Length: 371
Image 1 (cartoon, one colour):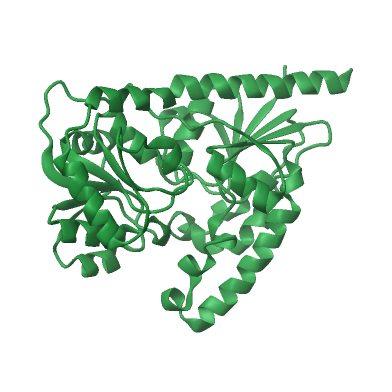
Image 2: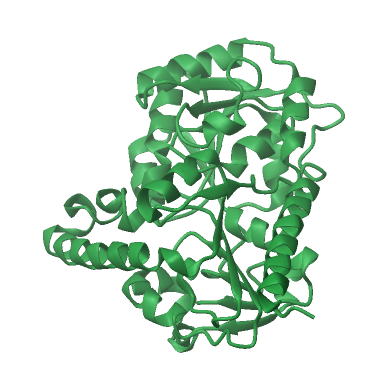
């Protein structure tokens, strides 16, 4: 029987990557799980049930609160995982775990959420002088340059790449010089579905981590110009600055349960995606509830939002462009059945089936190698 290891960057909450991991853990319940840091109780029971191994970072005091600051240590930590017992390694990577070291007989299938943004094309957004000061920025730029070189040099450790979108497949080609199969991540279309009776209320909704590349400020300014109330769900390091910027024009709700988020999707007139996303689970969750989306027409949104059918794609990332699109979406009558039908193409069963086939292909490759 093939021994399978699933490797994930860190387990500190149920975001998009963890929802991918959840389906994989359900499909492969006998696998063992490796991760840099695991905050117990922060992820779903399906993930928690697997035998889990953590890195040496786990032993640092209160690591769950500041693990991101240990980024320069991640390469060393992932290379310490002992995967010699496993015939097949399945990594779910947006940072470093695509570079784990496996035995010479094993195969490594990497489901790549994205090549790490903070080391490649978004260094300034995370570590610019206006964010951490000139001295801190200079130090982090050097550290990220080293991390990018390591990331590129270890791209060959995976035998096969699977990307979450064609946009990410292009990034993998650019940064790793590797080709990738595309398998869209799972959306829980059984849970996220329209209410039997729900009249949209006149407000826009953002569901997002409050981090720089999400461009939440565009949603705030766009709604202010369009005179549409805005509710924001999510937490992160940008919350205080965004609240100051909003000046009371947006309601910050903090983190919310899936049930509360679903209720908000159902009530909102429109859901906003102002940043350039690698894929974007939130727009599809909203569409599964029958709610149209206004999104920046770049990145993964071009693969998940159908312009003029399930929402509106915005050409330019300016408050004025978003205000016009928000006003247009709120004034139109979209076909909620068509919006829902589009989202159903991205369901959990479809993702699980496609990944099982890819894992079977890798197992077959193991068998042919043995022959």
